[in-house]
Length: 165
Image (cartoon, rainbow, N blue to C red):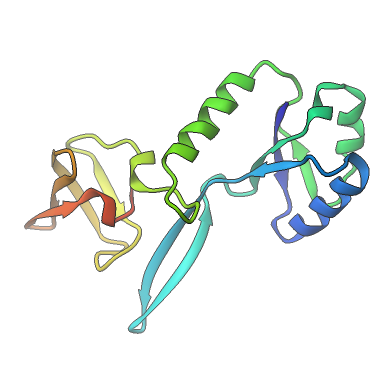
């Protein structure tokens, strides 16, 4: 059974160790990430960003039993448990599968995870246009026509990461 947990980022190692001591080694943790490359002072800086912030998905077969939720609440590094019942399991599994299908070989989400629409305003997260705002004019299979200020540019979908504003 999957649970959505909010954890203290700095205490993730403590949380994993404490969890394994109490429940055993069958723990699965999933947290979707994006790799952002920024240009700062003529140096490229790579940064991993968790798209869910402090939240992560955690799977263990013992979560089906109610008594384990009480033990889980007292683990070091855990702020709180977002899901307490099994009603949302299908949505959680669908979201995790959507993320995994959009990952590259290094486990980072690619642009195909994010939905795009014409006339949508977006911001580049990496590349030479990092932090620049643009508007989508036309969508094609592998390319996008954008309006960056007064400049019309055709870019490759797979080489840049951007999100809508």
